Length: 397
Image: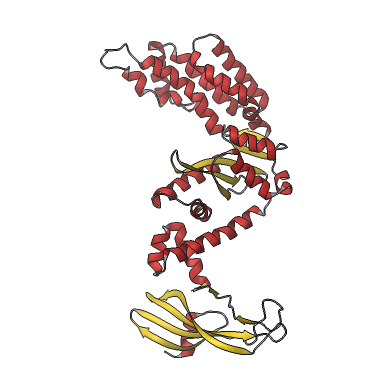
């Protein structure tokens, strides 16, 4: 194949094809050189065309017609007269032992498959592909962290349940993952905020997190000026625990009874968690029959509905009115199981009610991110290295 035809097929900027070394069905090897006549010294910036010697470097490129392509780069070693040093030339089309376009393809493949699969697909080593993914993710993270962040979302996810966790930090305005810091303690979040600097932290106006005391300590220390809001999902889950405790107490039967629990109450566990405004007529009739048979379920369900109304209210005044109605139900003494929920609410009431004052910030973006990260963890059959998990997570999101 002629050299000019191969140059067109390769289409690498400022690269000249000197000849085809191997043109076989299973491999294509092409000899190339740079067309830059006088490269500049990386130290003094003076161009030089004095060649000391030449070396052949093998560069992997994208496949051509299903064949792996290897470029033999006739790389010059130059001498710069001003500084008297010798350097090998660089080229923007090459990234180490692979071309820049192959590097982009590898990163794109790593988003859709494991690093092992991407390495096997292109006939490269896992170490090379993983190093490329980690380096690329570092560039992505630096670019994201330079932007100002008004709403900061903080949550945790696991690498290995009950053993290894990471703190996931997301920009609530863009949905981009800023960092995945090892561990889930106060030092993890505080260290990230300290590294961002006081100017970046000052731009944060709202922080959304779960009910972690460790995160609260870090937020109070580094972001004391911002409104700290508890995630709505976690708060509703706290509230629902009271109704669950009432249902479990009612469905149990005396020891020795067959069956050991009331089937109708057990089968209604999902229906009881539905909000009143989301019920169909048939579902409401089923609940009415259940409440007639088990009257203590009715105040528990109404209490949970009033706690839902904390978030359904359009303003803080409406939220406080819903809270007053919940307090009236709780004072009857029919739902003592809600006592722990009341204690939790008193401890976090400022962060819960600030949801209205902070513009009702959603936390769905970080929950969606955590779901993607768990899919990534299962697809890779687990991670043992925090840096690799962060790199893959940054590229995936």
